[in-house]
Length: 287
Image 1: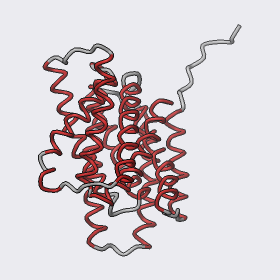
Image 2: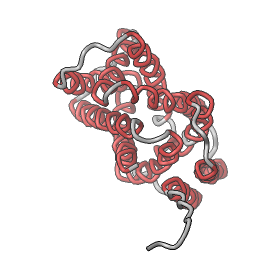
Image 3: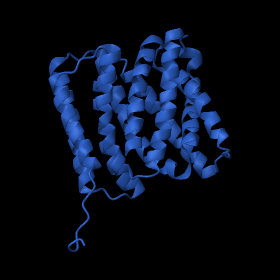
Image 4: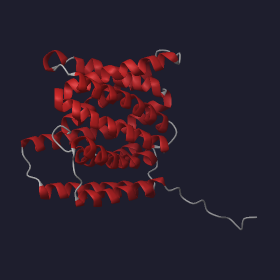
């Protein structure tokens, strides 16, 4: 669980760097360059471990998740150019709730009462935040586009949760990170001739930082999902809001509102519920 929490922190900081880059050169250029740099980092790590080319079934799984993750990231990066970082993260928290039930259908995991309570608490926290935004902001075209993009991203993210659980059982973290970034380079590269914008030096620094954090976060998630069930780790995603609030304030002077603070408190409670281990029944006095 500690590794999953570290992964969330890494990826939340990556989101802040990517928002800065996407505002400068557009979501597609930023996403493609991030993936290209990340591939250059992850590929040597994978090759250094002497890994062979994956077999057909594993390769199919790599491709499946990488395609989902590519469009999940692209829609998310577009959304954060239209919405405050913390609010975009909060709205995307519908994904872990969906993922819990996808885990039941696709992985056969038994959904515990504790996991359901944790996810519902986290989701309730996001509703408080969204309600606060709706009461304070006028929804223009850009906001509507941002909301649509973040909802699409959330649906793809939910499916990605399930795929990484399968993927982490058959491949190592470096291999997963390599295919994750490499496939994105190829897919997004199809649109690069038409939409590419040349970044300046500061934007390249942001993208390099984002790429390093992407690889670190992807590897940490792969390590964690290989050792714990999705229903245990999924609610920890809600801690990402805490990081997004901090980084949004540091990078973009995005202020927290009262509904945001209340929602965050509920989200923290959901993570606490998820982290609790059920007590083993006692059969007699200890000696």
